[in-house]
Length: 313
Image 1 (cartoon, rainbow, N blue to C red):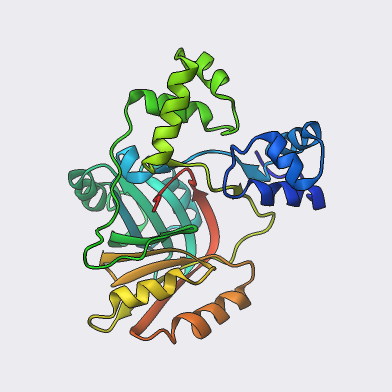
Image 2: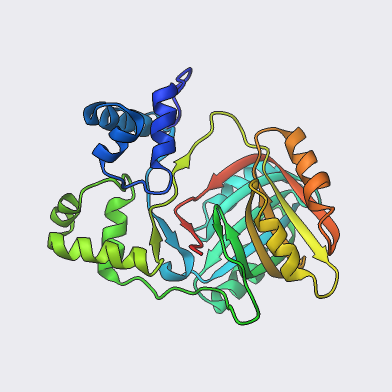
């Protein structure tokens, strides 16, 4: 739902959103104790934040568990066509997670997830090239994800990327039922999907324990545009892991992955002002030991962003 014009969350709203961070299913009484308000007030405030489109309360589902192990970060160059119109068409593709019109070496940055290597091949050689206006597709495949949102995984040579087991049919029903509001009670979910409350409770507990889903992340929708960017990074030989570790510690960096394709690494940056973006790139990223070169693509307009799938590290 779109943010209502002129609506500004107040101090209590901000306190409730801060209290939800880390566990969006936290009991209302616990939240009320944290923010020093009544449970009824807290419940109504959360409902209003949802209605106003300021927050989303959906579980984060791991891409591997959801059956989409192949993550692509694709730069697209456009000819004889509006990049904005083409970006809207690309956003309609089922595989598209994030579609940004950007300023940089490419006109559009696309993040896509696909279930198999065969479908990756079809997507890159038939689906995208067959769309009018696409002049060139420059893909990269994520190999080892070091950071997603606030997740952080410090790899060693004995520490392979985490890959979670696939969700089954009942798991998917539970997640679908929680998509609009993850604070829905186990009893309500059970009634909706025709399962027992104990089955729903045990399934949710197991999916959290195995890191197939997470209720740690509160999705806040900013009122204004974010000065986001994808940055392709090439590194000196043998420095990939150390550069990834350094990037993952930077708060404004929301995603870090080694890649096969256009660059050695790709990271995503999220800030509120373009000046912060410039400072972050030149003062924090370029000086990292091992960084050879950077290629930023500054987001002019985000056409689509799907925040319910990601990596749970």
